Length: 293
View 1: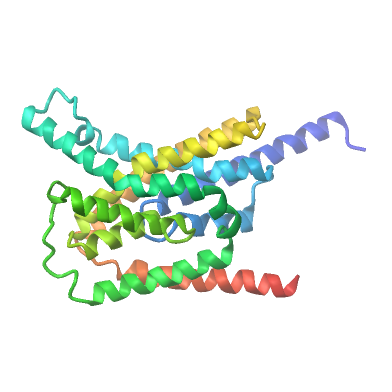
View 2: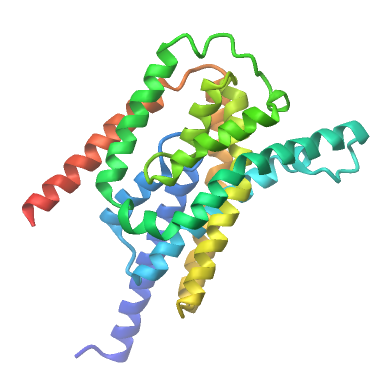
């Protein structure tokens, strides 16, 4: 039998292991949330390789709530631009900011409605590695095809402020595609915005902004369901969640800066090839695992 000291030491070690896993999850979330490569696909892989030693109910809510850290990075980085009450803005600039928020809200309505209605069904029927692998590959091909076509040449919309209400709504319809795991919310909205005539920079920025209400809403929905089902966070689980959010926030700042710098000099073909390779890896890994079991 283990002595009390040995038992405490083993428990401390396990807690340290969990903390290291949480840090890895935060890094993966922060880096992949804003790139069009599917954070869900990466989180599934990471969970399979270094899965948290936690109940499924907690892991399900953790995978969504950790996104709050990522979205806070957008709020902080673009705070003045998104703040219609800023004292540094004149009346015209404040009106422009309100107009931007109206477009963001309109673009989020389709995903908010269907996401609320289909959340449980999506989790039960589509949240699996094979769907993720398929969507990774399909949208990887679409990115390559789009960038190889003439659609991306001479975009009519160079700035987010030039996006019309109608275009914002259409981008919101593209965002519906991201309800399918592995699609990538940023990937779907960036792809849609580019098809609708937006430049890569404008598409990426508007995608960042759309993430604010969508991800706050998704996190709130998961938390409400978590608590309504009679679950509660333990002390360590609350710490793990906050730590994951903090790491995701820090990494997201660099991820957003990287993407905005990248799109000024390059197209999205690299991300298309990356998605295809990752999709094949996911499909092969889980396929071999299923055959071996």
